[in-house]
Amino acid sequence: MKGTLYLIPNTLGPSEFDMVLPRDVVELINSLDYFIVENDKTARAFIKSILPEKNQRVIVMEILDKQTDPLDLPLFLAPLLKGKNAGIISEAGVPCVADPGAELVGMAHRKGVPVKPCATVWILVPPLRVADWVKRFTVPVPTSAIVPRA
Image 1: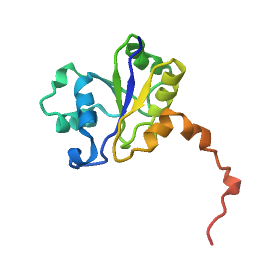
Image 2: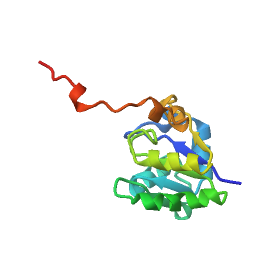
Image 3: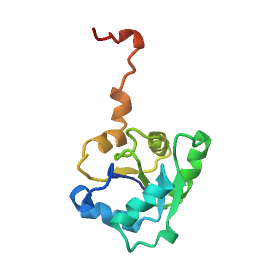
């Protein structure tokens, strides 16, 4: 059985987490020990701020940022293919919108790994990404179609 890749929302700065993250999301984060993140330091600080008692030493974090070699993405999914659950935490607040996690989610879909968004105040965007609708309904606009303002 394959593990699940959870899209975990993050805040875009200091905030009261109980106002942004539902209790079940906090419990999910507490249950995970494998995360794919853009920045190890800020992801650990995020987890520590909502779960100060969580043992940071058992947490494994893979860095997925703009410099990550796309050939490394299958390595990030390997534990999930063996049944381990993982969380992806973005620096952009919502995973897979303005970060490199979108490629990983696409690869997870292709490999049959379940992808589940976590509820937050940004409730609509993660399900659209999980369903791959963002890619379907986003069309590139040619620069020739952009009319400069007068």
